Image (tube, rainbow, N blue to C red; front, side, top):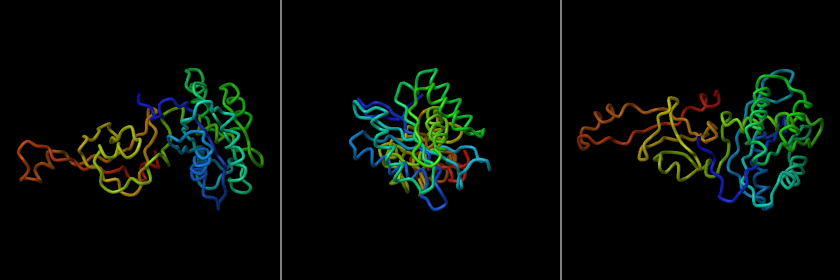
Length: 275
């Protein structure tokens, strides 16, 4: 199992947020990106990535269009703990969230979410949030038992459910997609696989059957690149190219026996969003 890349010497903190937004707001993902900037300016470390997590769509749950929440994977400076993060993130959510929203904040410091028992409990809560209508008291109980700092920062505090769910689903390692990571928004056009991995902290790229490009293969990134979180790693899903034999046959002037670089494509947006 690969893991997201954290700078050496940093501690791993997960920050789940859900502001429940409104029809005019920019959404939780954008709010998470702004929070990354605020935490960085406060000298608390740097972000490794932000994942978006889809929760249950149900008329009994207040949401605008998607009912999603976000988790920030944070590489903290020494001595930075949940209380330090909350002292900056809490006031930010109170001011930065949409008017009338119910922002919630969940903070977990490794190893509270990575030991076997805590991970199992959190993964269970994340699964519940994708399949059941939950009460705030359930979130508070799970947070307390897993030593997760959970707080409400406006209105009735309904966002604590989504905030804890985002953290829990990120802990599962097999849910959601990255809406931000260093260099992600600059990825576009044609690059080799080797260039791709040098430009952004993507652990691997592969098609749905697990086939991975060679270092010199070309990937057509298009204009929408969103790696998914799989086995606790950032994985860019691809559409496999035509067989190398067919490519070789179409280029008769190439040296006999030499494999031309294959050209892969990023899996379509509709497919990725539906995963």
